[in-house]
Amino acid sequence: MDHDLKTRLLAMIALFEGSSGGRINVWDEQYLSLGTLHYAVGQGPGARFLMRVYELDPVGTLSCLGAPFVQAIKGGPASIRAYCKANVWKTENRWNKAFAALSRLPAYQQADAELAEPYLQGAVALARRYGLTSERGLAFALDRCVQQGTAVRGAVDQAYARVKGQDEVSVMAALAEAYAHTANPKYLDTVRKRSLTVAKGCSRLSGYPGDVDLERDFGLRLDRPWEGVAPGVPRVFLVDGGGKTVEWDGDESGVYGGQPLTRAWFAQMALVYPPGTQTQVGGVSLERFADGAIRLNKFPQK
Image (cartoon, rainbow, N blue to C red; front, side, top):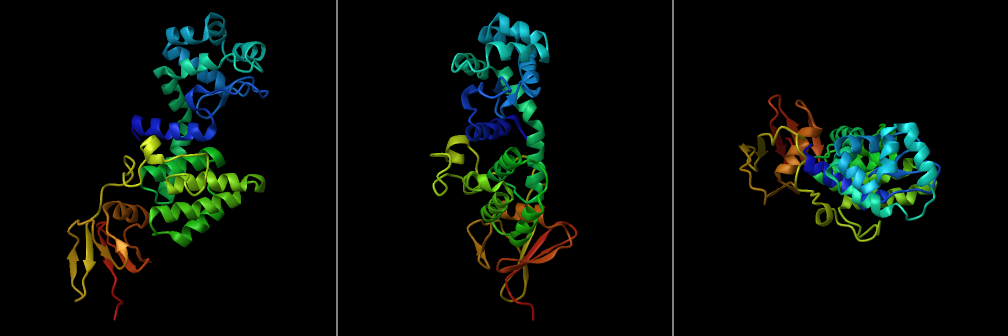
């Protein structure tokens, strides 16, 4: 996954998590939470985050936070916790400008991406598990990992089994409903709305969290695969009305058995169905050969 895609994914998560623009939380007993995923100083990750930013850019950190704070950072996690408890915790808006400035440093953005890496890797695994090949699909996977964890959920697997092979938006919508029903009932509606916003690519239907469009706001597209998702599009063959097998010419304007023929869809099928598979996908039968090629047949076998 390239740096640009990571940056755009984390920008989307920051919107949902309320951490955009370096926004911090100083109200709970973690003393200070910062970064895209609100790394908490009280629990340790927030202190490591600050230490990493300082390691990458000591001058920039000093300029944004001042000498006393930097001295605490140099003292390690215990020193940072003590300083934040005494000087940052419950100080309302006093530190907002300082951390907004800190968030604009490349060092901050690098440290943020480094600490988010376990979630990003979890998202890659989840996207592969559910055949999500687009940037929006990876965004959906990351959002579920952040809000609900990276553990595999049986109910979600069952929902996927019912829609496996359908278009990616339909798959994500089904997964969103399943994830919502595995959440604490108190938060079911919020989880559903948030996950459907990503699945559908915008908040027009869900209304969460306001006016959001993933392609417009973050450049996260449904028609663009995330890097390394699949080894290209396999060779594709179609059975015509006379029973003859012909190779697909790559024309993405065509429809076969009700299925639009696109490279993105074939890449998804190649990811979902291993060689040796014979199955029904919508109105067509799909066969995957040992060399990776795919054959579609919309005509009933006699």
